[in-house]
Image (cartoon, rainbow, N blue to C red; front, side, top):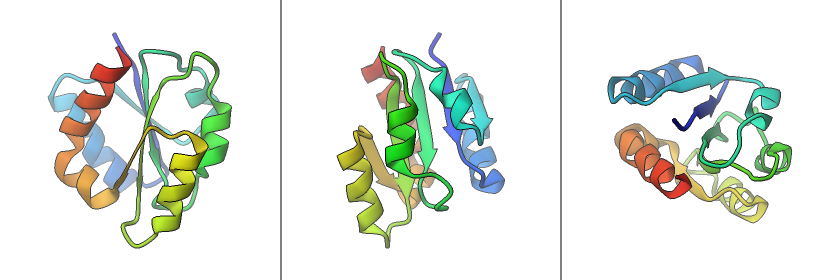
Amino acid sequence: MARVALLSRDLLFASRLQAELAGAGIDVELTASLDRVAELGAGDLVVVDLASGDFDAATVASSLAAPAPSTLAYYSHVDGAVRQAALAAGIERVVPRSRLAREGLTLVRSALADAG
């Protein structure tokens, strides 16, 4: 079974997303540790909070060992530079936080299907 790591220090938003995914039978580990994320491999998914400014996409992407897990990041919709930097760093999917709030389950399922 694929593992999903949700890399965030925003416990309110992340816990809400974790609960939504858990309700659909997806096992999600909420973490603020890049070391934990570095343990994931192919077939897994890392969801990264870029909205808070606590994590840098390039640092996250470079910490992933080969074969790397799929990646999904979210950012503040007003910060297009963060989106561009994430895509340039190799993050596969980058969506506004508001979209993840509305379509979190769909986005995660799609990323997991592509990872599998």
